[in-house]
Image (cartoon, rainbow, N blue to C red):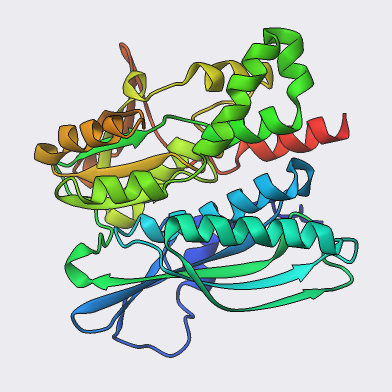
Length: 344
């Protein structure tokens, strides 16, 4: 009897074999199609483009409706922003669990409204209902759209010779969620003040600001939000769809103290763990330092952490005097640990 597939996103080999070849009616106006490791699709509108991204509407109710809804909006908006085009419109389908109260729904929607206003997003259509069988955290789905001049689009296609920059460092989402759900374990080991620091990482879980800053900094060739499988998974995906290799300097990737200690507490490899909010970008070397400086000016830590090389050289991670060839992590250690501690 075969084992059940792992939770989380389907692996890239399955996507490439069974999903990618069957995309409905071919249309030349679709200039960025669904691809493993690419956060958005693009439709050519002439001198403008329309960028779209669809994701679950993710409401982690245990965090409180306000925090959960903040995260739901920023997950969706981030995947459009990494195209270099600002998110502008939202269509949302809410398939809500029967137990959600009207008060909870009002609080949820008030936050969606306020965050969309801050990001310049207009809600244009949707569907809202309670249904048996629906449950948190996946309470529907949504699509965010952006429309702007074609020259602003980052397609994405990393090029040999590009620099690789990483904003905020590894395991941002892992830290934000583990600290929010399981603070007692962190407090026991590191104290109350540390818990507050780790919980503050929650509001770093967005790449909207990061991506739009980097897009203005110079010749950007690719941007990606390091979600499932974290920094290692995200860099592997950029290299894969760009058909390039990479040299990555692990020690140059920022590791926030709150992240380091949180991952140590829960025995999670931070480089393989989910990291919504970490922007991975490739850009012409002449623009890289300018992009890092522009992020820093806005209070977003970032670093140049590698370079793009020929595909034949593979993807190599350098750790001091040691090095290893990077393969896709396959499964994200966050999910297993999250389930483990929920049961506790």
